[in-house]
Image (cartoon, rainbow, N blue to C red; front, side, top):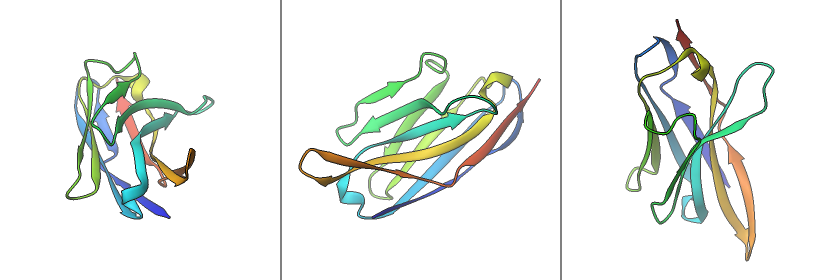
Length: 120
């Protein structure tokens, strides 16, 4: 089992910055990839950024050059630095961890979500 707790959301003006944090606990050794998804009202949940256990990163095209994902393995925490925020970034942001539960099988764990609102 993996538990994820997000923090750092809030209200910011367009052009501003926020940093989200996701603290993982439990069977953190089983996490293969950890990252952030977001869901805006009336839209499907989408991948924002992810980082693998080896440090490889993956970003949605819409956030490349503006958002940076990083992880602190000693603290079992992943961060999402969001710069140059736009109103279109407004959404609930969810931390996600893909953890191995059996050879070749992964399970997705989710945090409770944190609201990010960008005003114009």
